Amino acid sequence: MSDVEAGGREYDPSATHAFPDERVNRVLEFVQNDPEIRTYLQAQNVNPVKRKGYNDHGETHIQIVRHRALCLYDLLKRGGVEFNGAADQGLEEADEAVIIALAATLHDIGHVVHRDEHAYYSIPLAADVLDRILPEFYDAGEAVRVKGETLHAILCHHTEEDPLTTEAGVMRVADALDMERGRSRIPYERGGRGINTLSSQAITRVTLAEGDDRPVLVEIEMTDAAGVYQVDELLKAKLQDSGLEDWVRIVAINTHEEDERLVERIEL
Image (cartoon, rainbow, N blue to C red; front, side, top):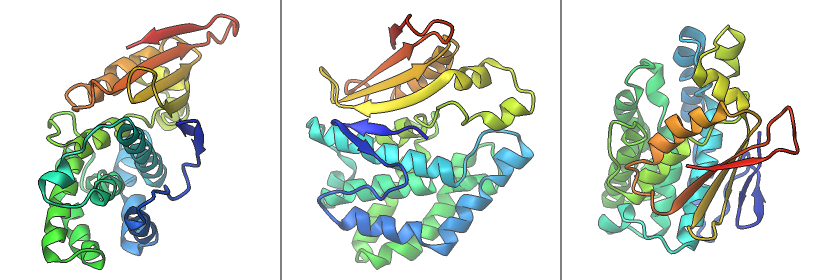
């Protein structure tokens, strides 16, 4: 798994993301050790992987997306970007990261019902989980508001729904950042040779860092120009209408596997 860099620091995707406010860290510790949530993360992989032959949507995908969502949040905050989800509900600034972390954790549990339209199935399932865990950290009124914002972010990871909050925009973009080589290994080994599979095989590393002219620079290293398809058709499609378009710059770096001396930078 590739390292994710933000502001010159390397992040371990398996580690709890450390923020000055401990609220999100307490929530993360709880959800990462919760038996029901862990079972969902395993069970939600059956339909997409075993039955449909798609790429992983289980524990590894959730770990990557959650970590990159929090890295993206961290970079945007340091870049002065204002978040409106928690604020519009009268919640505290510390709740922004909680909403993002919970949405990233639960956004794909609808796969236990079906791969198709899974974002809509995720809503009632995630609502039940949130009703159980949020009272551990919030009073009744706050729990309702955090729940609503989390469900909005979950729904809007689906490109058919436009995010109305910055938190939801982060969730939408982060979902597309799980794109390195090997993440489409299963359909590839089963004979898949479509452009989506081939482009995924070309991508070797995804890096998040502070940009020179924008808060976030996403650099995607690839060894073949086929990787541009995944960047353009998947990541760029998620960024469009996310609300983050003005703050995120995407650059693809093609190192040309046959000639490592030839490096091509493509900005999308």
